[in-house]
Length: 273
Picture 1: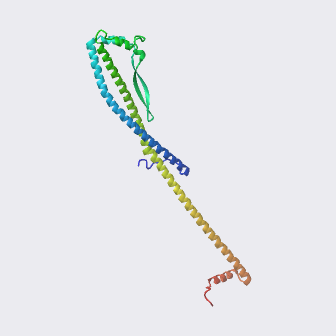
Picture 2: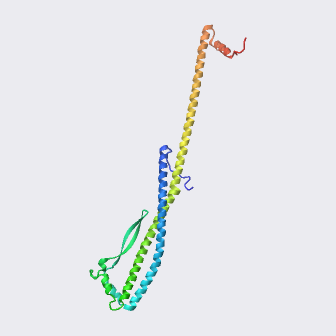
Picture 3: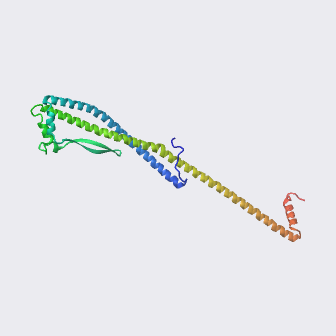
């Protein structure tokens, strides 16, 4: 397992063991949440990828249709229609606005196209786009010009949608990479390090418990030996006192009294003389 020989530098105490267990619980929960977040982002990533493929296919069709419609409009209305349209338009009627979507805590930019009513009104300031374009090709080719405008509007809508999907795709890609790095760090570095630290603290606490047990056994043995020594000293003192009393009664030396006591203790009581 990765990080098997790694652990945190901590003091092996019961309190620190509780702290490490709490950190392990937090790391486990964080790993589970980040894993779920990564899965949700991956699902959204694949959905956006499928939409991008569809949008690119639609973009090819829309760009081809807009190019053909422009060629038809030029053929029918002449090359001068371009200048007429440019002079008629003062501001764009089709605009783009952005908003944000929240997917598993990741903010994805989203672009939307909309028609500006003030720019498309015929009586707008400076002659709006709608009124000028509507009058373009009034002499000839008006239908082809309107079809060309509709084809280009459709192409712009597809391009806006594709730009939104591409931006969300790149944002999700970075978010998935970051989340996967965090998941791998928790799984392969943080959790093994905390687990090794917990195992180290448990081992040290067990060793301290064994040392305390051994110390108690040594203390008990010392107390037993001390009691035995005191008992032997008390017996020896009693024998000395008894020997002195015998020596005083019989008028002999203390050494002779000790000899008599030793002979009396060696005598077998079962032998009858």
